Image (cartoon, rainbow, N blue to C red):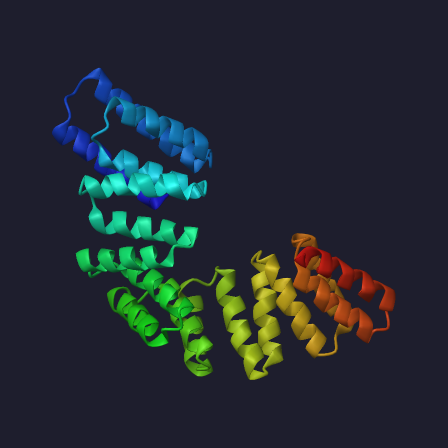
Length: 295
């Protein structure tokens, strides 16, 4: 939404400088404002309709295509989003963010080569684009190129030392390499900057769990649950199983299944606990459910 607000300001600035002050210009502005409101209300289809109307009136305003591309992305209509970002790039408007946003869309579509190329182009055009470094670093992690990933996260933190996402993602890079102390240090920093993000606690809890510090892991997972991240109940179930708290583990896996009835692994883990506690019929039922979900 910040990008939409930013581009509304840019759009109004462009209108003031370059467009004739007539009724048609006001109509384009009206459609744009209406699109912003609809976007904030998560009526993405309505926002796209308004942006399309504005484009029909004046097809030469790149901010309209940019924001429509962002909105198509929210609807997971990736091809349409990419087409709009292509148009923005053709019009040579705000190129670093245009390449970055197209890169995000390629990544969501699973086109990692294209995403990597766009993130690289974004940092070539704007070497102080921390989000592009962070997102490129995450692709490097996926590809096992941890040194390149760390270099990108380090660069992002050089640009913005208060970037909790960069700390979190660099922590993940350290974690995947078994460098638990460095990972903990980064997750601690991420939490200090943004203590309301539950994923930071989940990630730090995972490090504690790997180190065998179950009490600290449980504390972090419980904190994530308090903050509304219900998927962490699966992690809680695993830890409580390991600690022999079988009844609590069953409750945790049951909560995870309640939140995601297609969570096959949660059924399997609960089945294991049922077997440990002699509840064979319930275990068999969970195993059959998990098998059915995996087919």
